[in-house]
Length: 340
Image (cartoon, rainbow, N blue to C red; front, side):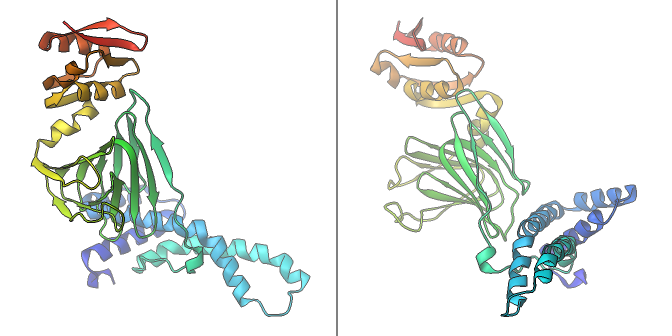
């Protein structure tokens, strides 16, 4: 039956069949080998199985409510007898078990959409992830995508039936997204919506400024549907391109960059090209608990070009003092930068 389907629908149907097969009793070793071979045959198979598993979990989460509503709709107008009321919970538990067991078979038949009363379709619970000073975090999402959070970053992940959405309140994160044309992956940050078109990209939203850097695939950056920044145009970014915005209503700047320089914070390095010392110190203060302050405002304007290894703040400042006319002294917060 799956031969007449397009490749994406066929992968979903096969994924549903595997859910039924693996969930029926104890899978054999041969089942495991065949399943692994199916996953390895195409990246689309793994994405389809992850999506099918998510649909199954959504069905199971709402099965009791749906069946309760169906029971209520089927009930006669007259009050039920006490004996019927006492037997209803048992019937509902049995029906709920059937519902969950049959979900894989429904997917196998190509039914990628679960029919539930609209009033019972609720957004999935959002999950908030945050990092403190000097802390990085890797988050694996249920759809197979992954997020790497830089220090002092806070974001909120909400997966609904039709959309995967992330709200980046403050900070920087690298998104490695498993593309699903039926469930867009959207990041809301800095007054813009960043929509994945199958890609790996970095988003930085700090102090009202926004940058989006693409390493692989494509990303679409759009203004919100309403508000002061809604006048902007959609921008499509490809590998090695960066979108920069210094205020929500400003004109964006597009440039060609080496994305690995932007991604380098994940491996303990920061790369700068003619950046002011003040911005560099602000970045370093997010990476270390021990803080550095600049005593002379003019020093904050000194340009820096180079690679900074994030081992410890004293070693970093010692190396910077070899390139710049600065020296460090202890302070109550950690270190203070003075002019030599």
